[in-house]
Image 1 (tube, rainbow, N blue to C red):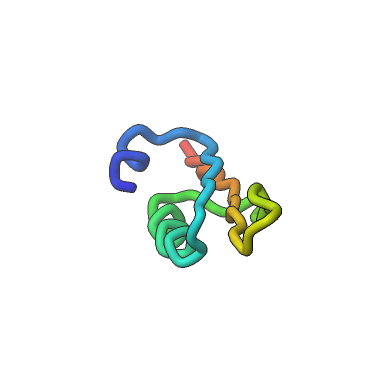
Image 2 (image 1 turned 90 degrees about the vertical axis):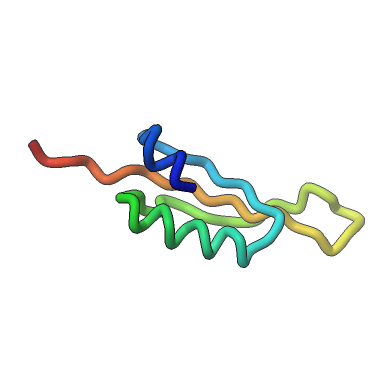
Length: 64
């Protein structure tokens, strides 16, 4: 996650197979100046109990 802060993309689409990892990394992204625009789940494997968590983060605009 620290590499993302160094590169500094304006938008990140985060796809995770584990919601606890997404929650952990969302906190790190918030501390690096990003906020979550939207989040949801996608059933990519319909015959299993497994779902993917998806979140979109955007960097807060810096005042000059």
